[in-house]
Length: 307
Ligand code: CP
Image (cartoon, rainbow, N blue to C red; front, side, top):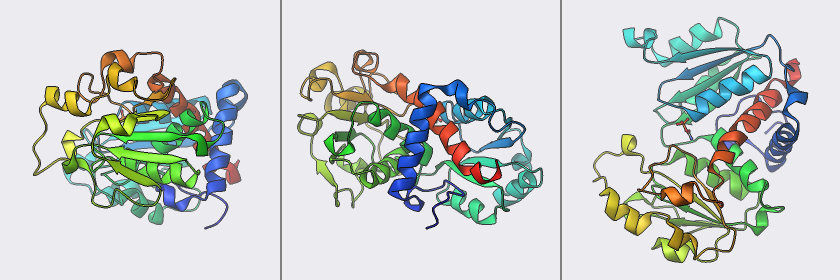
């Protein structure tokens, strides 16, 4: 592992000190965003999205524009992907136009890493979500959100609840938080949505949400990833909310001031009650805001040597 980040496709490629430096830079950006504006003027970022997105695509665009970069957005729909062009040919085509960063979201695992291996020097690939495998920039903004509430990661007792099995957010967040030295990660969700290897060093599986939440000081709720589920029944929304939804009563079991996170998009009344999502303990909109800072920090770090 070199000390300089060239691509950002999986958390596993990053050392603790690299993650801490990214978080420190994101924190500095959050305190004075204007000081970092137009520090990459004239550079180019391409968003290449094969799946729907609101937060990730827009915040990469907003981050790059704050830095003074040109931004081009391409989605599979409406591009030559519809005429049968492969992902790799699409990537080479975009790369030939001289971008500095290519941000890719794709439904199949490992494709961002595969593209990073094909990248020319000076082209940085960022994974904006590949199948159920990874969503590392989401983990970075989640870590920034926790860092704003806890002076030390070892003080955090985090519950992650819902569809863990199909969640790339959970996979990247668990890896990142463990690397940063989090105190505890408690996983809770229906057994059919819990990976076989969920209970490992640093994580524990809870059979019900009430016991998981008791005394926790941070809770991250996850939606059911319906678009990735095959061969399993989608639970009835009302029943799911009763068993696995975070409502005000359940939140009352947690430590006072427990922070509530959700990567979005939310399904209100399913995994989270509206009153909790909009309540004083919610940090959900802060997470969105932090997405801008985390992605500015990421782009600045990846393009640093060329600056
Ligand atoms: N959290 C997240 O990835 O949201 P989008 O799908 O809207 O980008």
